[in-house]
Image 1 (tube, rainbow over the protein chains, first blue to last red):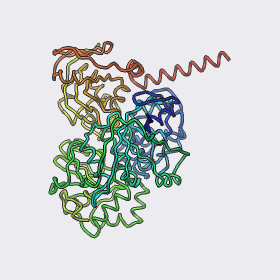
Image 2: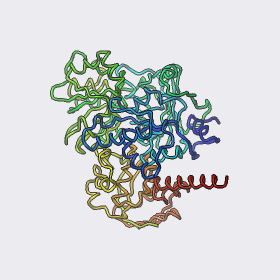
Image 3: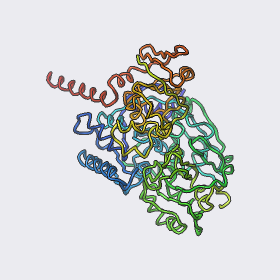
Image 4: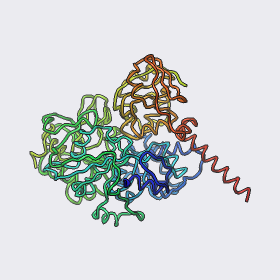
Length: 417
Length: 174
């Protein structure tokens, strides 16, 4: 029996022959953290070490509350900047850069065959480019900064084969919502997910990132796509270090194989208060909301912004609702600016915010009041996440959110395309 | 062996209701974190929880964010262990790294009710309840080492000291 991507990559790193279920101690290639670096520094300081083990491996990207919205956040950012200077950490991205997961990819840290750990649950995103990337907590990051090693259990792998063509008005976001709705929020707990099949193969990097990002919402340790020639070509120009892709063996031992025909999938919406509470948009049409959000690490790339702008172009958002646009990074912002996409948003009455996490985690830039409802392209709709515990969040694709923004109520985007 | 009173909750309890995102970067003190434990799930919890209480929950406990405060806030609120049908992966690690024992037993969860007094014997892997005794798989030694040290930071500190003294020994022999 052959081996999965996870077994091969982690086994090579540990220098032993491993199978799912084994535990290895390995050294990561990169360690990501963001605004939580302030709390990590606090933990690191308890270790009585002057310097981190490998400063070149540390990547810090400020994105969660940028620019600082309070004195407390400002102090966090200041402590991080001072630490970065003292430790001579070369890969530091200050508040103008954008969401860590997008910035990490754009700067060539997310590479095939690399082992990445990050103090953020959506670190799974880099599987889109063939990396093994996994979310960890704060103490753990502090410990890896100090020791350059971490223990990991080799996960079992669920292979998800995607075949068929997406219908008009249906996107990667609808695919992953459909899968999570079908399989449940704990489908892949402690496990790795591997996306394969002809449809997965044809996905753009932006679309691959939507699925890998939201693998976290089914509990996955890692969500992996096979890097195809076009992904490898794109990476050749971006890579910060050399890389060697790792692929699952053709006869790899998967825990299970799921198959989805994408041509059967409709636009989907995740309803409050869990990501697996999913319904087709047609069941929710007419539901009124107060605030729309297009952006986040799930859906804030040019591909998403162009789709939304295509629907909003020359029209006005429904009177009385708020529509927030948040490009995922400075780079995506600039691309959207040059393509005239941001002008469409401003013209239609949207608020265009600076690249960052925005209101997704309820810290600033569009907090919900009690009784308010948001329709967002983000990845989580847990109770209270965007503000009041008495508010509600619905999740959908950029096309569904844009179409709904014109009507002031949940609307099937296929009617407007 | 620990003994405590049970708080019982359901499935898929996520990190946002355990420790709301709005506090994640503004609250850094563990005792202050404790004041917000389970705030958006059960606002009564913090008012009534007592030191030594045990949380008993359904499947996928702690799903969502990687925020370690979800474990920290429970520990500092007084929770001394969590029994679940299953834990979300990152929460499981975070709890151990905070020195908060986590136990997986579907059978025990099904047979424990809110407010009951139960006992957990970590050495024997047994949970004693009013409805009988239930077993659970023992944690591996490497993980027990982290729990025994009181969490990952004290554990790593110990490891670094041992590395440093091993180095000094080698250099003094040379």
